[in-house]
Image (cartoon, rainbow, N blue to C red; front, side):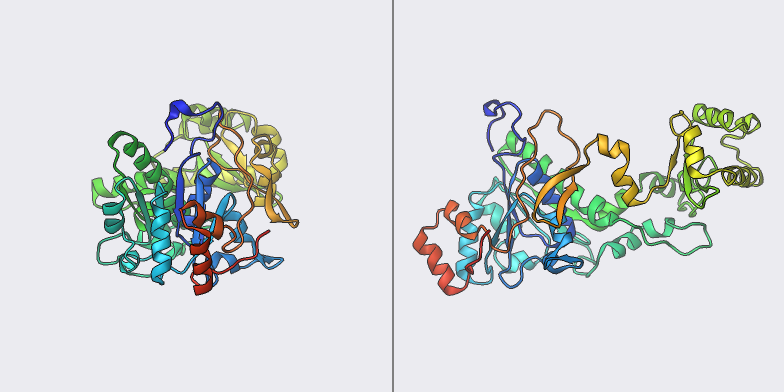
Length: 409
């Protein structure tokens, strides 16, 4: 990695960091896109036989997956057959130039290829090796197949995600285990390991379990379960619908509002604005009957006006009231627009010219690069040349079918 004192002003913070991305689908793709947005040279290493399955995930535009476009900007693609000895040897040449390798295979797959963390770090001790799996590198479930919903179920998230204790669990609208439980911990672990390497000179292994990550999303409920021996019932804790001052309420026009007046000062302001000062002493009321009575009164009040009318009265006040927006409405919201969260983007297709901006915003960094998601194997020749392979050696890999010739833009 480049010494920080040598960096020019407004340089992207991860420029000079090379990441080999052997992951597939959502968690790894999102993680490495964030790192690429911050300037890392992310090389997407793909199987020549179709590449990342995200490439053909529905919906498609002009034969290209929108999901793939959403996860793979600012990367380069190397298509190479790692089961062929020549492909494995070429990848080892490339690993010698890399700071990070990230993969998402089941435990043991990379070991069978001779590319597992122990073997690679013995040869390349500065390498940061990150593995994203469903259940982690050890334990009785390590080889179990799974997806986001399975991990959320195992972690107790779905059991808490009910409209009421007697209602069935609800399918979350976002991939919480994949993204918040997998991708973001991978980014945090990689960055932490790189910082640690700058001190010790040694890399590390980042073991990301999406089950672990999903469980870690519940610190408040977990501390209750650990302290009492009993998990909170769905709808019981304050932040899970147990308190009427923190809930979702319907309006006259069939829309919804969020009320989150947790602190007494916000609750008092809300009660004053809606003309119900007699509710003020009921903040945090413990009696279940009085609590449910207050909930019914709040619901009846919100049902007397439209969402727009309530927002005109409450949205700009310290009452912690906001709208439930559709995603399309959220993307067009003035606050989202003011934050430039929807940005022009080169995604390689005229049908999609905008994308979500990377988060968090690095205020002093240069604007992120604008490289469209790569074609399968688009950068194979240049990446292998950077690893020290001669034109003749690259041509031999092409002839052997280890690295297919690929049409470039």
